[in-house]
Image (cartoon, rainbow, N blue to C red; front, side, top):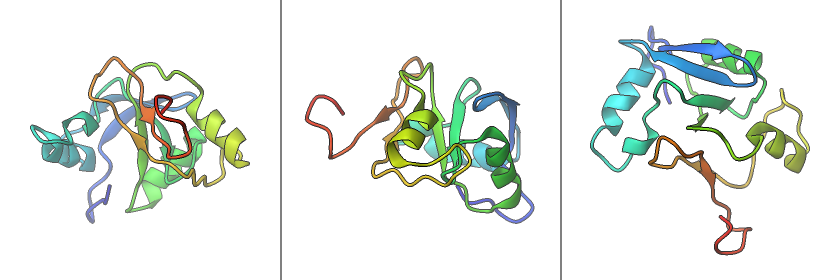
Length: 132
């Protein structure tokens, strides 16, 4: 997500173990992103209230994620819809030797599922077929 000059992310969030989206603000970058997603193959990637942001630019600590959203113009968000099947930041931290405030670079990308009631699905060429 690239923020234009003078435009903020445009989210209201509750902070706990992740950033829980409570509202999409009009005129923000997320609203613009969501408009691009409507009706196309990226429709499942629209950010909605109830979603959880679990990583921003490789950071998983909630306060660090907020700082990143305030300070950077380029944001790579990892969003979970529904209840995750595991502790995603913890899983990545443990598997890749990082801590919650470290920048993580997992060798796979997460794909959001189209269903609002299921969690994000991670795919990896390292996993056997049927486990991705």
